[in-house]
Amino acid sequence: MEINIQKRVLEKNETEADKNRAFFKNNKVFVLNMMSSPGSGKTETLCKTLGKLMPEIRVGVIVGDVCTTNDADRLEVTGAKVTQINTDQFGGDCHLAAPLIDASARQLGCDDLDLLIVENIGNLVCPAEFDIGEDARAVVLSVTEGEDKPLKYPLMFQVADAAILNKIDLLPYLDFDAPLAVENMKKVHPGIPVFEISAKTEEGFDPWLEWLRTKVKEKLGIVTK
Ligand code: MG
Ligand code: ZN
Image 1 (cartoon, rainbow, N blue to C red):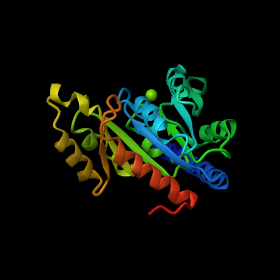
Image 2: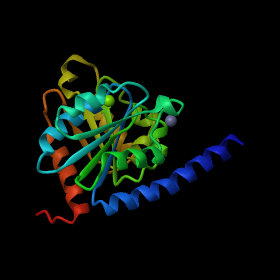
Image 3: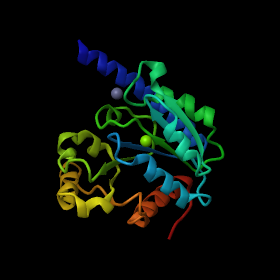
């Protein structure tokens, strides 16, 4: 019974996600869904990413949290168009579903954007199941978490098109085995690109930015190389 309800919820979401895809296509905007557990440094990674991509690429952000506008406030400083979704008004959902993205994307306006980034709610479980009509998904894992998270939450890493290993500036102070974490990501998703970065020191950003720029330009039909 419970499984059937969950199936219907996901089917309805899929229909809404298809509508979002059409809306994003009409607006010629590339959409990236960023996911992670809480505290992995998604917002800081985004702040630095926006600072490096803009104004060459026009970026907007939809930030999801259960409560507060703290992350939107931090992102607004970059000059990007930002809108915050607080799911506590809708029962405190722990993921962003397609209808919420539809409403926020229309409110934000996408016709003047090249890239829309959705900072999903910190959670490695259900955000992986909810298609929001995005073009690509990125998952952020930080070195203060366990190397085995990709094995514990395989779906999240399987649906991701890229993975970021963040906070590598802390590696000298931790027992975290970075090669093992990368190996675990590749075990559940062979061939996934993994970018080892520090959002704090900005180490390792160039390959990540290049991956994202290429994706955006592919969708917008801009020929690179
Ligand atoms: Mg955040
Ligand atoms: Zn959820």
